[in-house]
Length: 117
Image (cartoon, rainbow, N blue to C red; front, side, top):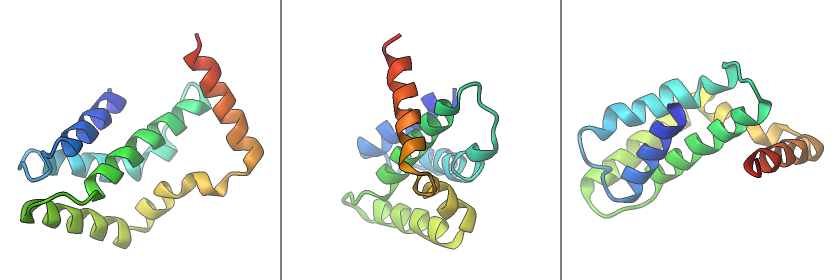
């Protein structure tokens, strides 16, 4: 369910829905609840954690992407400010950088194997 919500947020932002008032609670949930908390959740497969991470980072990237209009600029500034001020958000966004190459390869292979099922 959370992955579907993150995909929806990314799609809405990519289509230009950033200034819509309904985007604020969706973005807040994605950033405050998912980005900063998903690393502590329990997952059946370790690769699911990184799938969740990839989805939330794609939504974050869409939120920070430049789009025309003052409302979009205000949204970008608010998201950038949150990420810059919140150490948990920074740590969560950069979590994959703490892994070594062997761990990343193993997770990639597990994910590729799962996708071929």
